[in-house]
Length: 278
Image (cartoon, rainbow, N blue to C red; front, side, top):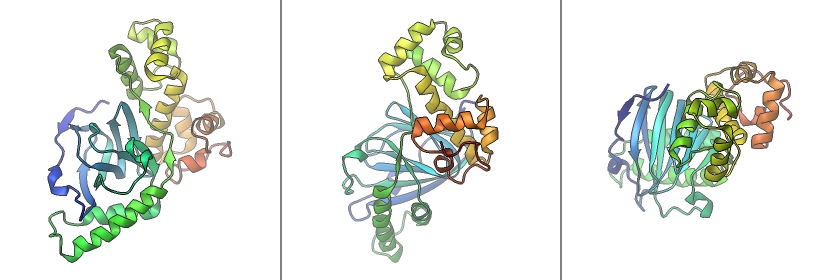
């Protein structure tokens, strides 16, 4: 279902990071089918769902964010947040002067370690109106320094679904994102869009530098993460995504992200595939 209720971001200046307080936290409960209007900040952002699933679109990519993952958004990048499943959204704002290397100038998905998860929770529970000299503000600075260290250590993941500029292809891609299993082949999607499979394949190569099959694998992985966050077993996820067996799904995951489903999904899904070793 497409989001249908648009809301504005919370007052960003209330949570703005400074050189004295370089990492600030913000929390917000968001209901399913809500969309936070496009916006950007002068600082970087770590978007994390403590519970539920959100979809973050930024820099011509879209990312499904379950509780085991977070999305890093650099300063000045326009982004939107769409809520797939009721979410406890936790956000860290990071001052642009924070000591992070070149890789952090691009959007990326990272694994959320248990320590980073706890740091996010504590930082987002601190009253944003706390005066700079008070104990909570000093504690915020110490925790923020540790959070930055955990971010540097976080494992980046090859996730994110690229979105094209071409309007015809963008419409088709958004249809796949909404219902990735409606057609199993490019021919089916091309027919629905009114274009030939050859034309759509060429647009994927020209616009996104990939094939439709490779792009759709990323969509299916994103959908699988959302299902896993709801506690669905691997056998259920494989069947819902159209795979003949859990082992076939396991093989796709391993080929696409370079790790077995048992590691990729962590503890979010119950059960295991028949071939979790890849």
